[in-house]
Image: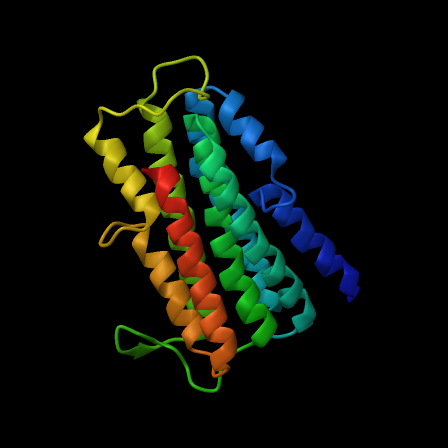
Length: 231
């Protein structure tokens, strides 16, 4: 109804739903203490559904919403990436590793939406495989691929378990799980590589060089931070 704080509250609600730090504690408990099947369903469906609803709001409001909402969401998303990846380095069991991985991936997705929400469309459209696309559509593609890559890989990892709880040491004797984890890590040409690549392309479409260098470096460093706990 034109109330600016309503949009802040809506974004805050999605941060809880997606498990963005500092609203992420429930994700760790749900992944670790739930059954493998339950955790697989949570990873595959819950986050993807929330992302699509967020995209619907973003698509309808991105050109009219105040840019400050996007800036706040972007700062929270960047901090959330770091919190998740640092915490993931201390996780010793499958449930907790996958929980922090999910928090990090949702932070990448939110960062793409927040960036366009904050800065709007750049004067020069970004190019995707030689075809010009809008920054909003590129952000949507990042979100869709991030949600699918994260959800499918985690569902596969949890689906492999045959135990009452997910809070176990990671299973090591599965080629499929190796591929799933490499996808989560963003190894090309697996599915998890593409949303990170598109996020970098989205960042580079904006003319502010200092901001672009900072954001690209932040994404690359956070991806590198995740490597030890995935391995």
